[in-house]
Length: 234
Image 1 (tube, rainbow, N blue to C red):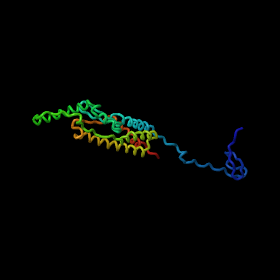
Image 2: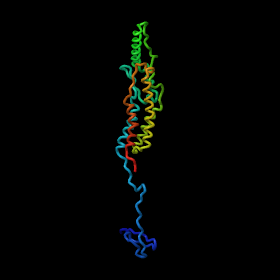
Image 3: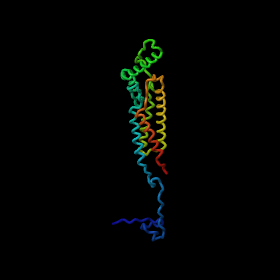
Image 4: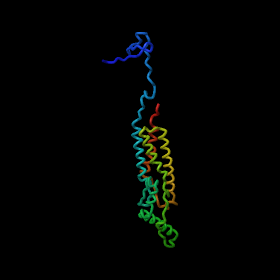
């Protein structure tokens, strides 16, 4: 037996079919249907554009991976030494600069230093023999201690990765990106200034930034650009 929908008359408690406009016993009108609710549950959910995740998530991962790839290169002629962001943050770059682990690099440096001294001696009349520099004659590289604040870069990229999964909310994404980018800019300026100072390099060393450094920049900047480019919620 099928059930019949009905409403209860508030005056006489009579069951009235749902299609009835009034109570047949007392004439009480049927209660009006309440207007649809405008609560957040009834509103359609705004869809997150698919391109936000497709851009912000992979670029944040690239930034994290780039932290462990070569960032900085110091070269003396054909011999090169490369350092990653991880090595700068932990101080492991100093192990690479030791004569026992980079003998070829320091041999090339001492060779260049000897040529420079020979040229200066010849220009002054060639008086006296030229002493070849020993391993104790070593220029300073752009840093002289671990840089633990560099961990801000992969941590910021990890935060941007998580926020990218939730659609890259604008204000948090931009703030995290600015924090990581500000310190990375400071580190790059200090490293470039030290790397171009002849007092630190002896005029024989050259430096350059490598792929890992630019990957870190991409991981910090791209999610913020996505957050600023996505349409605002109405």
